Length: 307
Image (cartoon, rainbow, N blue to C red; front, side):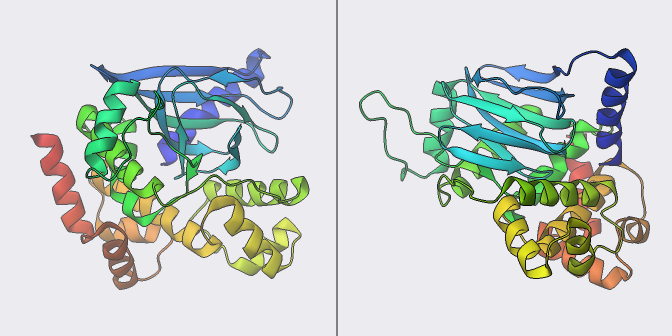
């Protein structure tokens, strides 16, 4: 994850050095019939005015670094690392960087017909068929960092580092199926959090991203945000979808899993480097998150990329 963030930081530094406007660049990692996977780096920041875009395809974008505000007719959401931005074909939307520059996303795109077939299969026939020409689509704008997505997220991030060969086609199918299943329980949300509180929580998220292994207690984060612990807890959860503790823990575990999949790192080093002071606690938390021990997860990852 550090390498993923470094690539974004380099792009932002290059923008500052050249004095050029913010922009979005996409590097296509793989494409096939009805699908594509792109590495999207955005260098827009607070001075840049957001503009409306319109999707040509269905999109599921994993935020791998940075934060931004995602808006459409269905509401608005704060996008943070580990969350999934959801979009339907034909949907108009805006992305804004009011509280910090830059983001990086691993974006999975699907032709509407192809995605519809995946969605119907994933829903096990429970998805309502197309009515009056309207395709089934996402009602929610975002999925927060959720435990059932953690193994897929770790595999995707390991592939993005370039140190692991992954089947992007298989991963795109799995990503679509799992997202459809989880998104079925989410509804559109309009947040009534004040702009000031949103800015403070966004800064806290970026603080966590810079060093998730640091001692980030609720009291310390709330103090930096200049909010009471109670107000910070409620606001953080409303904006990110998870509590601060769960957010930090999940980010640490994703970082460790990505390293185990991509690097020849020892389990004990992955545990300590990701902020765990006790290996047994790390093993327990890792198994709860990924459904396998750290060694088992690494072994499975290596087998999958050798096939």
